[in-house]
Image 1 (cartoon, rainbow, N blue to C red):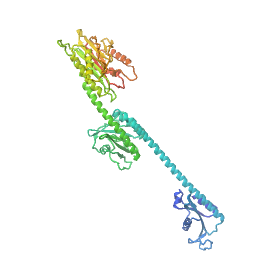
Image 2: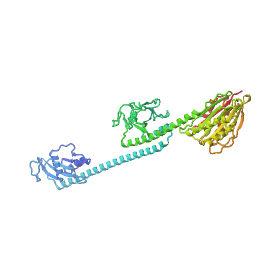
Image 3: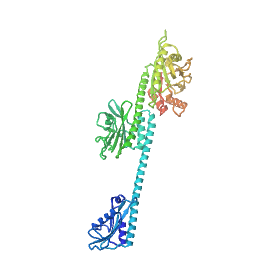
Image 4: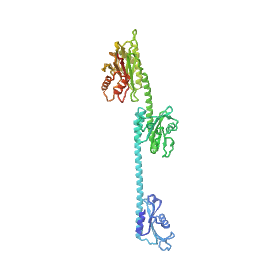
Length: 576
C-alpha cells in the first residue's frame, strides 16, 4: 500500500499520497499507508476520504477549506486540494480509498483523473489478489491439517486393528505385557508404560524382564504392590472406572486433571509431562489399569480418548483371558505335582526323578513317574521287589493331567490285583479296565518290576507300550538300549497280550526312563537326540549323584523351547 501511495505522489506531482482503508480492506490483508511514511496530514483529509467511501464515487476537489468545497475553485478559504478514488473488492464491496493532496488549491487535469483512477484499479486488484492468496493459504493449511488428521486417524485405526489381532491369541500375562508394549511403542510413543492388576485389594505391577526399560518400574526399583484405596491416580482410575489424565507442572490441568503424585509408583522420578490411566474393564469388574506416560505435553482430545479407550478394551479382554488360563494351568500343575510320587527308600538302590513342565504356560501334560514296593504274592515270601513306571498320557491340558491321575492309580491297583505276575499283565489289566469303564485314556508307558538277585544284582522285567526305549549304562560306561516295545495304550484298541522282557542289572549300573519331552524338538531328529542322550550317559563321571546327572541330561539334551512336559527317572544299583 505504501508503494501505491508513493506512485500516486510521483504521477500527480503532489507532496502526499495515502491509502485509507475501510474494515473490509483490512480484512483483505492490507494496512493503511501514506507517503512520505509518517507524514502528518490535515485532519480534513480522512474526512474527505470518508466522503468518497460514503458516496462510492471519485472526488477531485480543487480546494478544501473548513471541510467544504463548491467545485469551482473560488473558495478563498481553501487550504489544500484533494483527489480520491474508491478501492473496490471482487464483489463490489468498498475496501478503501486511494487519495492524494496538494498544499495549495489546484485544478485536476484529465490526465490526473485517469492516472489516479488507473492506480486505484491496480491497488484494488492487488488487494483482491491478497484476499485470494489468503483464502488459498488458509485452504491449503486446512487441507494440510485435514490430511495430517486423516493420516493420524489411519495410523490409529491401524493400531487398533493390530491390537485386535495381536491381543486375541495371547497366552499369559507376560505375553499380554509384551504385546501391549510393542503395539503402543511404535504409534503412541510413550516414554513409560505400566500395567497393574487388582489382587486381593492391592494393585500389583505386571513386570517384564530386567532389560525391559520401558514397561513397568525402572530397573533396580522394587515393583511393590500398593493399595487400591491409595492416593495414586491409577488407583483412582480403577476405583472410579474411568480414564484419568494426569498433567505435569508444565501442562494446564483439564477436567480430569489430577495434580499431585505421578500417575503410578512406576513413574516416580521420571518427570513425565502427561499420563493417561486407563481402567481395564472385565466381564464382572475392573481388572486393573494400563498407564501410558509421555515426557512432553500430550494432548488427549476426543479422538485420542476413543483410541485409548478401545485399546484398553482389547487389553482388558487379553488380561481376562490370560488370568483364566493362568488359573487353569496353576490348578492343573498343582494336581499333576500332587500325583508325582515321593520316591521310596530301597536298600541297594539309588532313585532320583526330575519333572519339568512345558515352557509355554498353556501346555500342561500327562507325563508321570511312579515307584512303589510290589505286593507279595499269595503264599509267597517278601522279595523287596519294586515297581517302576514312566508314562505319558496324550494331551497338554487339565484333562490330560486328570486322566494321568486315574491311569496311575489304576496301574497301581493292577499290580496289587495281579501280585506275583509280570508288568505286562498289569498293563493288560489296565487296558481292560479302561475299556470297561469307557475311560478315553491314550498314551505310552514303560512299566517295570525290579527284584533283588544274588551278588548285588537286580533283575529287571519290563513291558513297553509304545514308549521311548529305556537306557541302561553299566559301570564301565557301556550303554544299552532296551528297544523292544508293543503298541501304545489307546482306548479304541482291543486289549491283547503284551510282551515282557528281562535283564540283569549288575552293581554300578544305571537304568534311565524318560518321556519324549526330553528328546523331541521342533525341526530336530529325535534319533539324533537319543544318541546324544546315550553319549552323555556314557561319559558321565563315575559316582555322580543321580539328581545332578538328571539335571545335566536335561540341560544338555532337552529342547530350549520346550513344548511338552519331560520326566527323567533313574535307578542306580549300588556298587559292590
